[in-house]
View 1: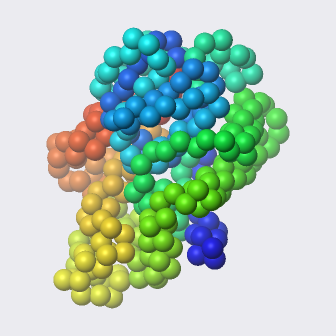
View 2: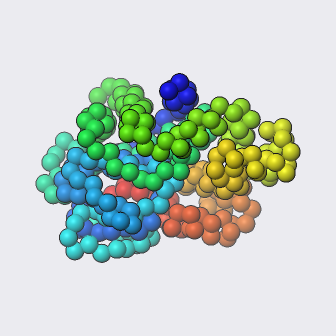
Length: 305
């Protein structure tokens, strides 16, 4: 338990966005992807997710870790499947936001998106490499989500501070839910081991600070003070992924942040995160997210409707 406490203490949590969504027309969207973690709470009706269309009922919560592609079906009856790209272009046909203080009156859900990074470098839930899952019969998590949504719809003094504190509380309760229900035990054990390794933490920090620079295995080896031949094996042994795959994910995550928060050109963003060839950057971006970089910029957030 002490290892889990140390990880929780090391987490940097950032609230990104929340919204309340009416389902205007049932639709199934293939390969939805976002860099932030997202909780979706069903207020009325249902949501299904994954290849087996697992059901999320009223009052239940779907948790989608950042970086996970997932098929999500909003509503029921007469559902047809569209691509992520088509959904981004036409989402106003299917979903519409509403004020949290007003009843939706139809099938609806609420969502909250947030970052949760260990040592401000590694997306904790993405590092577990766990699938989306449902949180059932957890009144505390439901209560925290309601508190965040209510606060976000207010204009009270200290609003952002209260949202930040409640988002941190939400992350802790999600981790507690995982531990209590003995979910993903092996992944948690692995994380508690490698987040204690100072050489690996040094690599994470170096990658974060040098996304546009030289991140070859040779450079990472010098940071960790291990041999170039060993660094790839060492990194994968502790994390389960190759260092270059991890680096690409970090570069793409930063590219998304820049697309949403700045007016920099796609060419300049690609260079800033380490891609000299703009065409290659665009191909890799679409391969990872399922949509072109320009559309990621326009949407601001997956469910910003």
